[in-house]
Image (cartoon, rainbow, N blue to C red):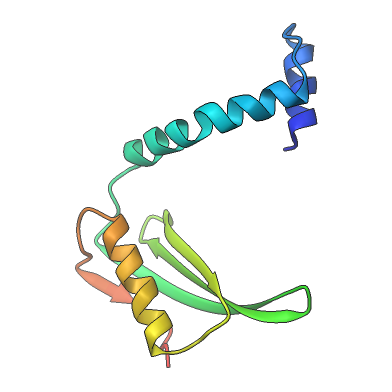
Length: 112
């Protein structure tokens, strides 16, 4: 949804603001709101699924790493060019750091 779309939605509800004001609100309140939403998220499940897939962006191949719990809640994603042991370790450490508890079981698609 664009800033102009938000401006239009607010106008339909009787709030007259410019898209520039909406942008300033996003800059001012966005980080704090995102932090509260993340803190209120449900605690991740005990089984995590780690997956990797190659995607092409602007004609170049990238690797998209994704971690989800057994409920389908996305724990973390990472997009990078490299596919090696160090990259996998870095992503796994990042996922572990973002969650309060380590999983009991990790399911992969035979990452090699």
